[in-house]
Image (tube, rainbow, N blue to C red):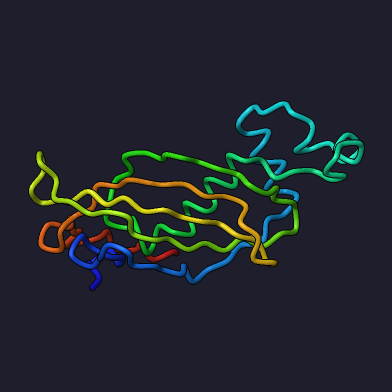
Length: 166
């Protein structure tokens, strides 16, 4: 089922297959502020608690781009460890994510097909949902990846040796 890099290969997926990703991640205030400032997002709803307290949400919202990155990351080991990303479609944020929420994810395989231009890979499309500790969906998207067939996963046959410290 897995390659030398871990993760699934094209042959391991079936249409309709649902995968509950094993890890969850609690979002901290630092996560939200750092990501927001790192990406030059100047909307105070993400980093100004006083401002956010006067909005309908009453507290800072987690940056939606962070939410997308986090939920994508939670799915990588199961869905795209042996793949390259081709894109996201139908991204929806039906409920806000807040600092202190824990995010979980699950994916459903929507379609698989052989790549017409790369016979050593296949095209996989799946829907991923991110949900909080209450089971409320905070993000949904469809994602398409180009995933290796098992016999063609690149492998590193050697790695550098660690140097001893004096």
